[in-house]
Every structure is written in C-alpha cells, then in structure tokens.
Length: 169
Image 1 (cartoon, rainbow, N blue to C red):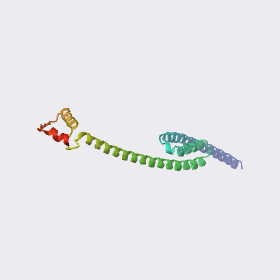
Image 2: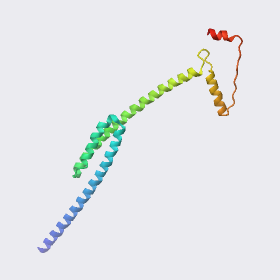
Image 3: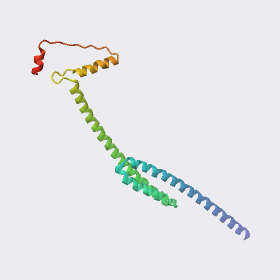
C-alpha cells in the first residue's frame, strides 16, 4: 500500500508538472498570438489610413483585434481571430474592388486627356486650311533632327501672287 501511495504521489507530481508545462506553453502561444494581433492591428491601421472609404470597417476590425489581445483563453482567441480574419478579408476585398474601380476611372481619364492632348497637338502642328505642317511643327522637327544628328531637308516655295489667295481663304 506504501508503494501505491508513492506511485500515486509521483503520478500526481508528474501530472502537475505536465499541467504546469502545458499551461506555460499555452500562455507562450497566446502571447505570440497577441504579438501577431498587435502587428496585424498596426498593419490594418496603416491600410485604413490609405483607404478612406473602408476606414470605418477597418476601425471595427482593429478594435476587435485590440479586444482579443486581452483574452486569456486560447479557444476564445482562436474564435475571435477567425471572426476578425473574415472581417478583415471582406474589408480588403472591398478595398481591392474600390481601388480597381479608381484605377479604371483614372485610366479612362488619362485616355480622355491623351486624346484631347493629341487633338491640341494636331491643331497646333497643322495648318487648318492645307493640313500641312505648321511653322511650329517644322521648327520642332528640325530641332529634333539637329539634336539627334539625323539628316533632314527643308523645302521652301515662293509662289507669286499667293498672298491674294491666302487672304481670300
């Protein structure tokens, strides 16, 4: 019976030691999760600053992540983190959609501006009556040819009595 008591005492000591070790391990894991949550909260905060329309949604997620950091039960932490991940994923998906729409709108605007710029360049570089290159376009082309050491040729015509035609048209 003394051997049984000793075995029982040793078993209890080993169970207590294992329980203490398991508790320390869970506590360490919980602390690691809390550190990760702090990093995630800071990241979400930085993202929310960059994206105004989803800021409210991300603020809710950040508040929840801060609350999770106070939890001690790993099961509660796991459940709360899972919920927060879902919310964060939805927020990010919403931001991606909003950013894609913004990029698409900006591209459309750029295409519009490029079209207008091209039209303005055409107006400036072409004579509206003849469609020939204007003096400004010719000077620009000559300057470009000189700077790039490209051969070029300029032809000038002097038409008698052309002023009268030019004045009429």
